[in-house]
Image 1 (cartoon, rainbow, N blue to C red):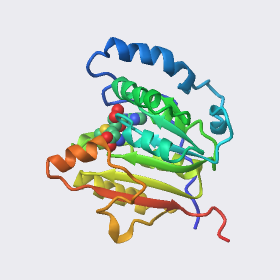
Image 2 (spheres, protein in one colour):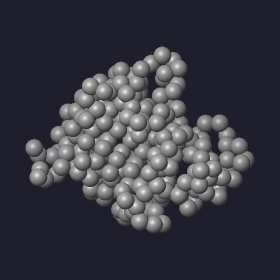
Image 3 (cartoon, rainbow, N blue to C red):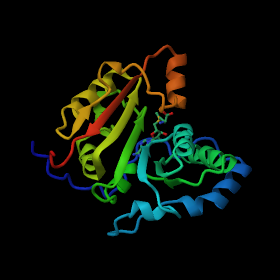
Length: 237
Ligand SMILES: C[S@@+](CC[C@H](N)C(=O)[O-])C[C@H]1O[C@@H](n2cnc3c(N)ncnc32)[C@H](O)[C@@H]1O
């Protein structure tokens, strides 16, 4: 089956969510100033990012989390998979500060951070470079006029298809029935992704810890869906 031709890369930041919540406490500000410079991914116009070079020692693979919130899932995956280079994208500075506290407390060395619109980074990552991607509880933007703000979209899926290795896994979760339908339409309908969660969409796998938003949804009585997709091989063997 033919893959879709590339969609133009978004070069302009179009962020709709919050970048900042409550003012950071002085300890958090100190942590950001001290830890962030070494972990921060900065884009240089026209220069693609070499993801493996972001890490001080050789990594077995690169995984990416888009919209990590408070970072508890990212930190868990990083500790559990020390050979993997983890890239987390999150523009919300309070979430970044929370993750930095975790990185320091658990002495985590395999996380790098992109603190802006993930789509800007996606456009600069090389083809065939990422082994796993997590998009957990993305902002649902439930009003029809806001659907164009959803991160799950054709341009983003085209980038994911391009940067994911053959057989790489895409994990997504949502507690919003309308967004679930949207994801199924967009991702199941995309020729390079095959759903592997099957009948088990109601359960996380053992290597998938809960996030803050999942807990909030459960406390409010909302069920979540957990979706896993595999990127089809580029050349069928
Ligand atoms: C509903 S929260 C979910 C957070 C976390 N994944 C969880 O499950 O607890 C969605 C997160 O996506 C982030 N986000 C929204 N748009 C984004 C974008 N374009 N790039 C990266 N992150 C984004 C928001 O700042 C927010 O932290």
